[in-house]
Length: 116
Image (cartoon, rainbow, N blue to C red; front, side, top):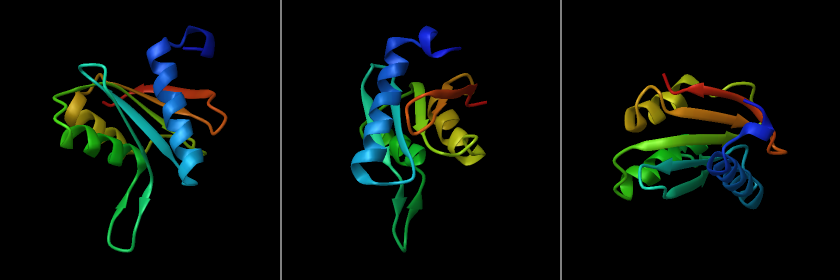
């Protein structure tokens, strides 16, 4: 899937994730979209007693807000891949076919994979 064929709703969650990363000055920003179309946006949590990736935090926010499923997830990061633990969090709520988008800090889509 190229930038030009990216669904507008998927483009939106990449933009939200990018904004969270920039606004909070964190290594990663993430956003997820639930079954009703609501979005949850988060950055990396790095406290002495709690460490969560941006995507884990966004999934936790969705769960805490009553989401029953996920339609899609996006991460903006300098990383080359979305870690297995992050994909597992998406899979737990959205199922194995939930798309997980990875974009660079400039918002350019790098990869799209199922939570699997």
